[in-house]
Length: 218
Image (tube, rainbow, N blue to C red; front, side, top):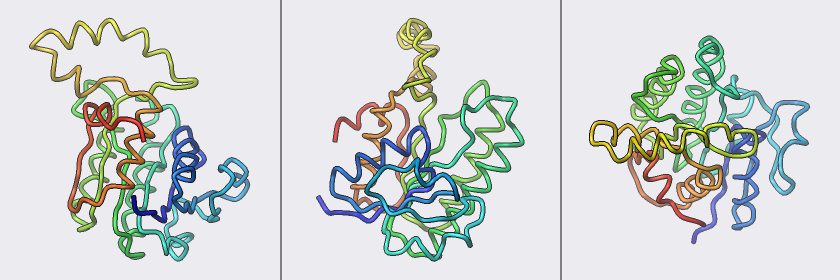
């Protein structure tokens, strides 16, 4: 396994912290973006990069020597009521990250998107789709991960839906939706992200829910 230098935007969040901890344990170097005052929320061992995810000029000069850029920034606990926040935060941060990654010359861009099409969260999906289009147009080698809901501490209520998913997965009319919009665990997401970091594949790779499930343990 080749050791990477990884730049993480969104490292203080629900997914970012355990991801950084895993990357460090596997011997990778991690540079993590953090706003002033939130540095202590980052795991010990990563290099703190002070900056604002909504302003690429605040951090673009600090990405190098990273060869992988991971974009995790987004509004916490998404809901249909947060349409404007998605555009102001998720869209701005995502498009800014693509531009910064191009300018800094990273080898691989990893983007946390969302599963679609789906019957709800239209604004959230639209923003993620726009950022995916920008990635494709950029010419970057990229991995785009499309989970639907990530189960973990504080995010457990969808376990109540497991029987419904089981039934949908066995009916031909709903099987595709059940697979595409399936539940993934925090552990599975971290595994999939680490696998993406360590993947040498070129071009664009999409990891939907089945691929995230199949990422295994690393």
